[in-house]
Image (cartoon, rainbow, N blue to C red; front, top):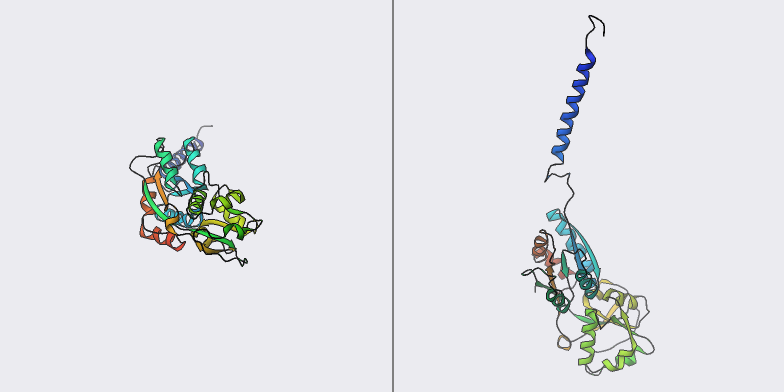
Length: 270
């Protein structure tokens, strides 16, 4: 720089540096805890496959009200319980029967004091929508004859709740031995429903809510309530569940959630 020249460049540098620092402070404030820039918390829910349609709608309502995102994994209660036992990162478990919740509770995988019975359901016999089969469920009813050379689709009675309920009902009605060799054992109740909807099985045993969810099947008849244990859906927070899990359980028992479940055919409240 020559004598008499104005030293503009250092001042420009300082001005630019100051602006950058101010901008940085602003960005830091935007990323501060609790601000909208932070990602929303996400809950992971493991739920019985029969809850798919209703719970998807309930989850959306919960997220709208709380800004807590929900990611739900659907499968048979047996599969989900085993995954939780093996360390899967579920915050909440919603089972289609009490036995698999009992199993997790016995193995110390459920947070004490969070378990509640949430919903009820009914067990029904279904056929493809275009089927003409007519059956009245009663002791000794002609289920095997109605199957002909086809198979009876239901959840695997050795593990899937819908299949366990089905075996109990058919045993009580005195027809289990006749149809047991002719089962299409599905991995969950929605898979059993799909066998009937696609015409791969002439008859199936599913929950009433499943039958109502698929226009490709029709209900032939409903099993008497006293022919099987009550179909109850318990819910609980897992041992490692996030703090937001309690808000989710509370929301499941709100009037808004109950109305959604009822619209899909579930029995509420419990």
